[in-house]
Image (cartoon, rainbow, N blue to C red; front, side):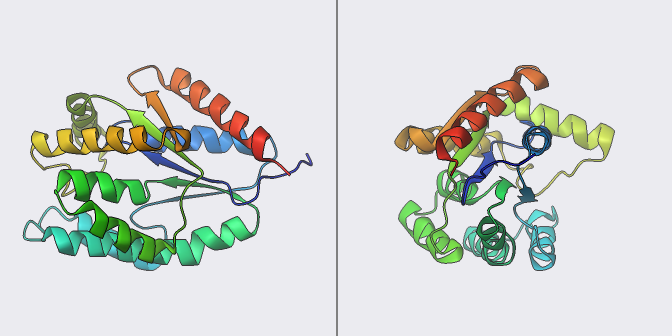
Length: 220
């Protein structure tokens, strides 16, 4: 199938672990591919050999002594590698990039969650990404307790990852959740907030229709 493909269209998925990000990215990838688009799917932290090594350090539950400043710099190092090695080249090839987490995770988790200075975080993030920002941020909104319950269930029954941030106090996760909503409120044109408590297919249909609408408005 031949079609015009949007140039530099970058979609990120945000939300707490347990919100269904991985599932929804896979479903959207399949739907876009079926329409003839060329795509690249990746994740944060990681997505490169170097980034995956950093991910293991960041998520290791034994690393309880890690300072918040160390954490933000490691996430940013992984992101810098991913942007230059993977994301920018894909966008230059006119591929649609789908990324599981990106810079907004830093602002939500390390800014609102860890209470680090948001202006400093923004400066570090801009340096790490060269100013590359997503065209659309899909936020899978789910109550904190439900997300943690889903994540714990997946860990216990499916051998899913349970990482260092998952084991933070519930208050931390509530600050992160409110941080995401505040970020979305400041730039509503870039965010799609989706109620992730609904059935998987229903969530997918809302995301798919919103993405197709955006692509139709941005094709060349």
